[in-house]
Length: 84
Length: 104
Image (cartoon, rainbow over the protein chains, first blue to last red):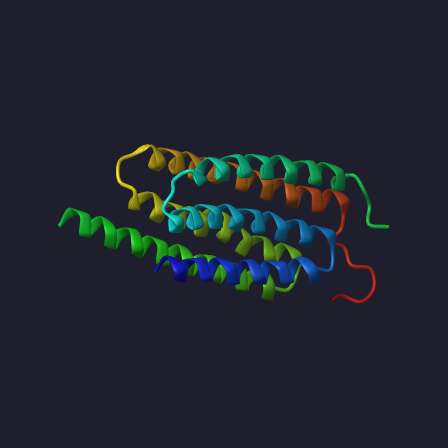
């Protein structure tokens, strides 16, 4: 049953990667990478639960903090840069 | 009996979270236009991931890991709408949504 949920999360990551590659503008790619980061957090905790250990939740918390700061830093740069 | 009820609830919540995750991913791939794609992305961030994490947290009962996962869910529910708002404001300010010429 955990394997079914992990498979669904991996399929969702594949679709988001497709949108990140073929998005017409830079903001589509930023949106897809943000959701990909959230899927990675879910996958870390699910794989840790499958292996039977509970030490992976700390890694997920730290990764979510870093991902939030990264996405805000990217948007601060692209906000004042025109497309031309 | 109580263990069986918690177990079944945990699997049901995880199945619902997996369904929302899949529907959000299909939406981001297939919607035409940028602002139409932001909405399924919000479904993934605020409805799919917290439900799956809640299902995992229910599996562990009353322990430290459950408190940590609930802290992570609380942080996700606060920072993901903030990032989505900043993204939409960046698109409006940089005027990247105005098409010049043929619309893709």
